[in-house]
Amino acid sequence: MNLSIQLAPKNKQGLSLTNPVMTASGTFGYGTEYSHMFDIQKLGAMVCKGTSLEPREGNPQPRLAETACGLLNSIGLQNIGVEALIKEKAPIWAGWRLPVIVNIVGETIDDYARLAGELDGVAGIGGIEVNIGCPNIKAGGAEFGAKPGSAAEVTAAVKAATSLPVLVKLTPNTSDIAEVAMAVAEAKADAISLINTLKGIAIDIARRRPLLGSITGGLSGPAIKPVALYMVYEVAGAVELPIIGCGGIATASDALEFIMAGASAIQVGTANLTNPRAPLDVLEGIEQFMGKEGIEDIAELIGAARG
Amino acid sequence: MRQEIASVTANTELMPQVHLMWLESPQIASIAQPGHFVMVRCGEGLEYQLRRPFSIHQVDKTKVKLALLFTVVGKGTHWLSQCRVGDNIDLLGPLGNGYSIHPGSQNLLLVAGGIGIAPLVFLAQQALSQGQSVTLLLGTSTATQLYPEHLLPSEVKLIIATEDGTAGKKGLITDLLPDFTGWADQIFACGPTSMYQTIVAQNQQKSKPVQISLEVRMGCGLGVCYGCTVKTKSGLRQVCKDGPIFDLGDILWGELDL
Image 1 (cartoon, helix red, strand yellow):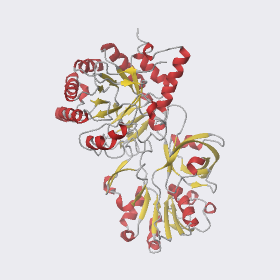
Image 2 (spheres, one colour; image 1 turned 30 degrees about the vertical axis):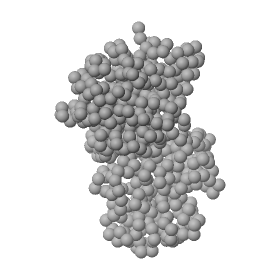
Image 3 (cartoon, chains in turn brown, blue; image 1 turned 45 degrees about the vertical axis):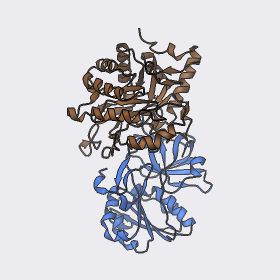
Image 4 (cartoon, chains in turn red, orange; image 1 turned 180 degrees about the vertical axis):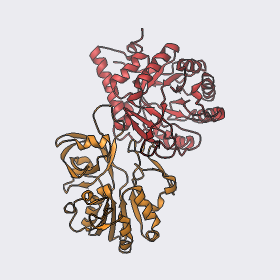
């Protein structure tokens, strides 16, 4: 049975995964936190916590609110910064079999380019995932990924600064995600991952104010799965690039839905918080499904639900 | 830290809306320390996106079972309260950094506000087994919410306050604190944020080290999601990983709006 996939076929170095199951940024830390619980190296790839040029403190409490089948978060991208990541985390990853992809976040296009440059050639780093769901401070706080133009600019700047495979993670908070995907593809992204969280609010009725310290948050979990699946389906019809599906995946059947909608790989996110073994469960479930259905190669399933 | 499927061996409503649950959880019970907590997976299926954190209330003498003491406040704790003997519950633990009894401390003053009694019984048991003296100040809103005295080790000196005066001294437990501070070598508190802020305001506490158990909304319990970060005098700290026990003086209360 072959589950391996290539996520960056046009990149010199490539991004080869032994299977399509990845962990989503922000829900799996730096991998080291879970590595004693199960053999995380059985997974296809790991995406680490969103990383900025300088360490970030993140948002005020409360940062989390559970909603119906979902989770609102406003962590605010608290992270150790790229310098500490290269010094403290990358050497650990260099000894791992699975590729580690660093999710990068910036407030300006130059931030992204500098981050990509710093990570280029660092042992232990197999690729970059560009989070374009961050507010573009120069453009008044709208997300980079909200418009095709700014999404393409960030992508091109990152590509110019690194030879690493570049995944661009799209935000659903846009009016036409296929258009953004096409712009990102045009700017030579190696692959596209989607979706990031959907913007949302919860209100504490006893205190008559928003529940989260920073008012708005990003919604994730099973509540967003149909939306994410739709967007993957849309984007898979619009671009030729490998797609990594993400959004509410908790089980193997969820993952298979994304793969059949056109994703080459998937990311397990919020489910990790309740069940740290969720990615492994998903992988084992995919293998069982393939065995039962007599499928030899995962490629047979990619886009299988498309007309 | 282990993930363990624990079997419920007892579940009783000890006080109104407060349950005492015993679980057979040898892997976690055998290494748990006072102040540690467990993350409990509540519910089946995909409805609940987060585990719920609970202090470890007690560990039995054989270190095979552990107890949780919890108030039913929402759907997760409601689900847990409905579990029956023999049901299996998925736990992650023991988690966090526990209370730390300094070498040389002989007189330990424990201050519990309401359900804050939960981790302090475990601490009292450990301290007594090491030959230390324990005084427990226990405050609740009313007499029916008081933890039953017969479940406490008999060597514990118990002082009670209730807000409505139905048992013990009428008022807040912190009203009684100054009377005992001089006796104590160390103070260990668990209760609502308002209780901690009162302790901070009582200037005389400055001379005695106070450890508190901090409660914020947690996501993973392992330091992965950064959902529970608070600012302290020594920088950003994750309550789940660096806490939940902190020195009272380390917390920047002005920054904390829970």
